[in-house]
Image 1 (cartoon, rainbow, N blue to C red):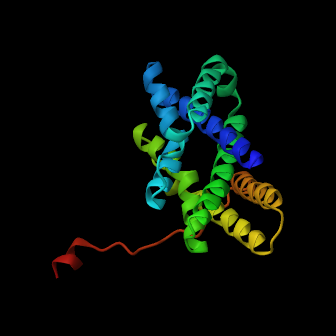
Image 2 (image 1 turned 90 degrees about the horizontal axis):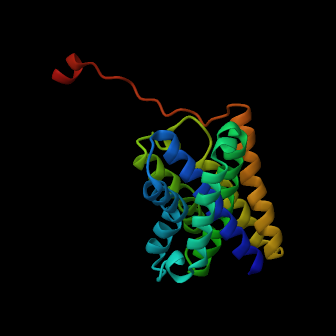
Image 3 (image 1 turned 30 degrees about the vertical axis):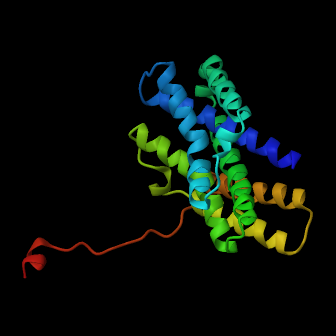
Length: 212
């Protein structure tokens, strides 16, 4: 349980940092605005997962340490904002680690509610990406899942890897760490080599054809 809790707190902090920086890059909000976006980025996905699973109270309501970690992440982003702005790769690493950790932990929590394995994988994916989706919407950006890059699919792949390893009765810590690394590596390789899934194409319909 200890490694899971540490990973979850770390992921919460990473998301808070990325959310605070994304908010400040889009506009010049005050501390409340940045803090709000940081909170949404950190707890949005987990909250949606818990609501869908019927898990109450929500994780951040039950454990106030998560709130302290979010605040610490936002303060950290403020103190080192100039450095973080110049270190784009660092921000990318924060985001990649965050989604990897939240995916696996979300999958594991869903499994505790005895849902079907693939549903558990989807819940894990929701845990990882929905906070970022809400962040993008609030900052008037196109959500990352709609861009040409491997993001949600990497989370889903990592969740499936976790479920496969767990089915083999491997030690829980091995399943956690290995699956987190799978997501992280897929994300890094995809961005480095500009890999993406096949584009969904549809034929354009002319107005004349519609009138006919």
